[in-house]
Length: 513
Image 1 (cartoon, helix red, strand yellow):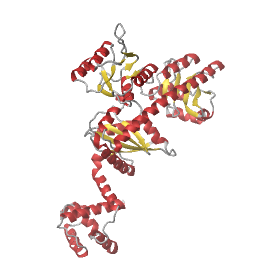
Image 2 (image 1 turned 120 degrees about the vertical axis):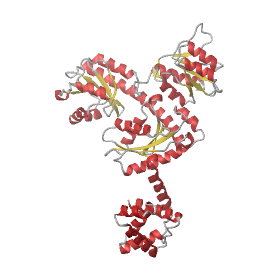
Image 3 (image 1 turned 180 degrees about the vertical axis):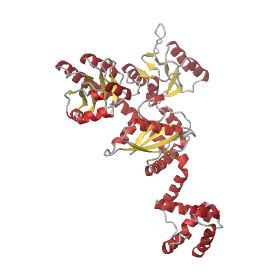
Image 4 (image 1 turned 90 degrees about the horizontal axis):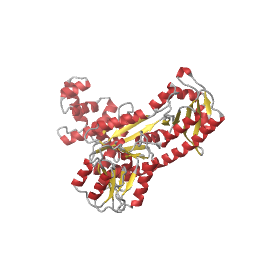
């Protein structure tokens, strides 16, 4: 079993594109049908492969007769509108393949995903892990949870009658409660899991709502993939301990298969996103492969940090950003260096980007902090510009991490000044111009002419506004301006000179900050 949106996402890496969406993108696909012209009646299946069908119109009719949720057809022509309308009327998703795509590859992917089943309601991990948890629970006689190395729940058994409060909190919160995890750490449970494959009994702690339980490490070679826990009032007898250990080995095989599948999908997604970030003439086609609409998008640049963990935080953030598939995830991400870049459909509204960042932040452990920048809205061809804006916004947020993520829409003025400062650093600011001469006079005579000039420029020549900003009388501003003209050739009646001086003062202020 697999969800429809997941199948569409995977097929996108084979050049498939979604011509018309289904009413229920989260529909579960449990069977596959392939066109057979010799069959006496219609072939029935959730996913219909129109092998050898000459026209899309005929393929849609066959898929409707097969009561399919998704049709896979190979064509090089643009589909006719009435054909797509027929598909929509019957709730049929139509996925079009390029003529050069071999049917044997597509069939292998579809049969493997639909019949093997690698989806859960969270969008990650093999569904048969839940069935395996049920099997282990029945064999050892207690509720079972399967967890990853960070104590996050991967799967659990349906057996609930003997579940203690700590187990229920673990399942509902999708991870072990902090106080329970601290207790396990204090008792050396995690040290045991890191070093041994032998199941370990953990006695009950009634004040934490924790009954006794036995845990075994889930390991592939020397790598700890997670753990499997069973609630039990006393240490398991030898036969049940052996069942738990064998179950841990089987779980490791499932987790390895799931991780390989997820890593391959992340690699395909990452390569496509990098194409968009670096610029490609086929941006619209790349978006189609990623399952994103050809509308305005924004780039989000994100970095994550954790004490004493150099790379773990950003890898965890990338894993969270890429959890889920198809319609279940609004953006598409890549990890480039130490930064996660996400392309997110946003149009002119920056709120979805802030919402996406808040959701991601909530999904990370409490000790992980993130810095993020949000680029401006961009058409598919202008995504590289949004990426630059996201990088510049990220640099600003890194300097003030306590505040919310910085968006280009809100901080464009600061970013522009930063660009000007960067451009100025490529050469030299004038060493003999009016600003330099006033700066030397202020340094030698403690006159404060530069703050006065800036206040006057920012007030657009309004003496009262400049005086209010400095807390002095307007006549003081007038007097200082007159004295400045004796020190430097200001030319305050020239608008270009005024703009250049204001920019220079702003750049110097940022350098001083």
